[in-house]
View 1 (spheres, rainbow, N blue to C red):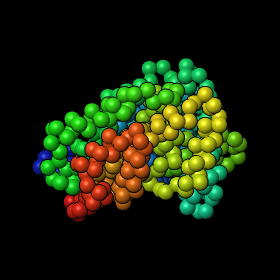
View 2 (view 1 turned 60 degrees about the vertical axis):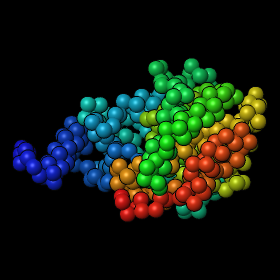
View 3 (view 1 turned 30 degrees about the vertical axis):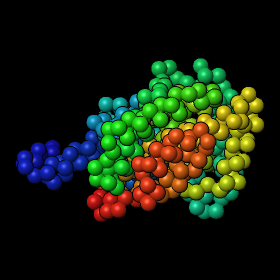
View 4 (view 1 turned 90 degrees about the horizontal axis):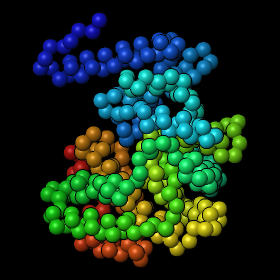
Length: 355
């Protein structure tokens, strides 16, 4: 039995909680027949979840550890089962305890698109496979692709996300943030941009659709070879959101040729979508996502002490600036130029040291 530590020692209390969590995990594994499995910790993500690869007598699985006071597993379970019901390659769920925040998943292996690209695999081929999945998903009726009671990507949700830029990034470079007047102008401009009809259909949006969360599954053909991960934040929203997330990646540069091939293939599958409205939607949602990501990456450093994301901020700023060059985003470009001078569109000076 674990002894409760003497109060006043933060380090002892942390050790106690960690030991208690490990005991809970071991009991979960015992109940589900994995008590003797070798446990290998995998790289984390931007959440509070942890992942472990389990190996036991020739079989394998992935353990997701999502502490219930910080993360919820229900959204992941719901979307995983829904995607599988549609015939897509989401991991099978072997066991789950919602109250404990523990899930045993199918192990898709190690062939993320990111690792394949690093090993020299053909970029265009992988990105077109990811695009083919989106084309198939978006070809289905909304009442089939969207599970019951799924959250809508509302205007207010979009606004809350872009506010991460002004709430976290701006104070990191000027120490005092923005005036209330500037913040209000920023919000109003976004409401003007996103509030207009984006001119594209609505469908299931996975929201973090990029090469880190996609896997090539050996032995499967067609879009079944595209393994899907990290979709617990899925919503109903514009079909272009996941597409822009794919080709304007915060973590890697995508070639112009590949990006253009992706857009061309997608548009050719949906002749009813106006190309001009498609491009406008891509620009607006790209700018919205980049503003959000810059804020998130800053917050991960300042609040969560996760510095690894800082190196990507200059790339995301380049993507943000490029999106704002679209004629209909001129109002956002003007606001950015007036409030965040070009010399500050980088990793804020001293931020890494403060983390």
